[in-house]
Length: 149
Image 1 (spheres, rainbow, N blue to C red):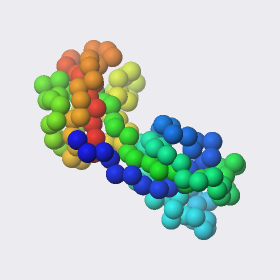
Image 2: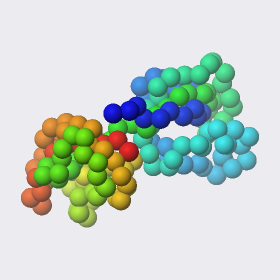
Image 3: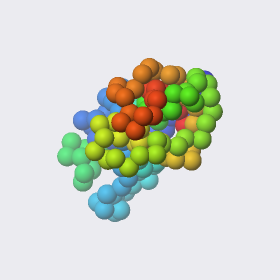
Image 4: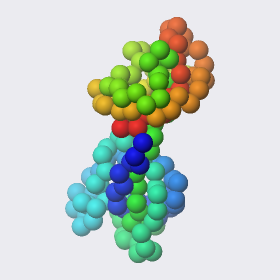
């Protein structure tokens, strides 16, 4: 499997450490007039990213991050989610569909509806990580699976 493609972006200096993972939620109103806007908000909203490296020591002022921002190299993080055990085969290329469930209070809801992966997206099952942390209250047989878009 090939490595995820990397991008250069700006993030808060307090977050700019190798291995740090974050979810990019999109720009804030303060970003609209910033001269670094295009470099800073070049990631896809509601996706998880991992910092792979830092680029130089230059710190830029930022109205959001009080300690400023600096350049880092990031790649999309793999996504771990609960998935139908009958379809969980390493190397499979699938069109992702989250578990059909609207029980937002279920302790498994977030792992069955992962941030960073949307219904209808093509992805690959990289690895079957193991059993789901709990039994599904609806009776679905689930495995924990690592996905990559």
